Length: 418
Ligand code: SF4
Image (cartoon, rainbow, N blue to C red; front, side, top):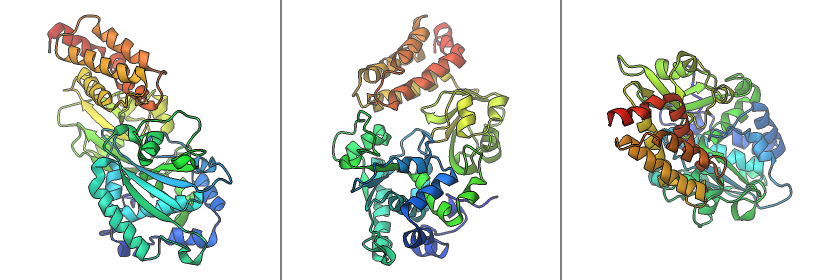
């Protein structure tokens, strides 16, 4: 078994204690760059590593930092710990078990961005994790890893936690910023983008927890070392959250480009005995659903290969559906979720998610009319391309793809009742 880069607590007991983290090279990367490197050199190293955002979009991390409006200060860094995608539980494990590597990543990002203040925005249900992070941050201040004139340099930094109120939409970066400013968590119109006008109208970098946790090893071991893992366009390692019909659900750290088969069968122990993989949701509820064919199972899990199947890797929360399950039930569950989480700011999403859920419920309950499957498909497609943020689009993808690929599951409700 290869060493873990992100889930290091699986190899090193008690690495969630600062002294143990320091004994294993902790904060060496941050200290080195603060005392010997310019922010631009750090950005160049991260760009050279090819690291891409692990929150879902897969945008190049160093490139994102380069977009900060030059010469405008103060700047802010925000760690997006609003992990809410159904089936995604990787950031929770990192925050819980390897918090100092994450916090060092936040510090590295702040140094590269020339920000003196960073926030960790935690989903409301992470109140216990936020309390633990507060204790860790207090320790870092007392031990001189946060504060003024770090390591005798001109660099100053403090990091604060902030708890959301349990809204999925606050994982969307502009809604997150609104919430952090104490406003209703709804997405902003863009442009301006956060790199120009983010938190309090100032240039802001927002990165996901897992993305930031990659930074200390990249700085310590170099871009070339990191690039040697994964694929050419999707370098590095990824934590895949595996759930659904598998024997061993959980988080698995693998190089990008490992196949669905490796994850589901080699790591996850496969589906229950006698069952077959019927479908895969590669990115939680926000997925275009894939059929469980041999070709899909042998597809590398990287940003390009999953996109080539017409879906997306997203945050890599792989949910497996076996052949006992009905995809109209899956579509109903995702519809209920998105109807509940729509922030209501734009009409196609607010009304469309309600109607998708309503029609899907009617089909599932056995009271559907023959035209309901097409009606459900039409409602979903009417939402597409008309929304302010990605949630509206995401809500349609499991529904449209389930109807396209598993229409018989929906129609069975008309002919056989429930
Ligand atoms: Fe809100 Fe949905 Fe519009 Fe996004 S798409 S702004 S979640 S109503």
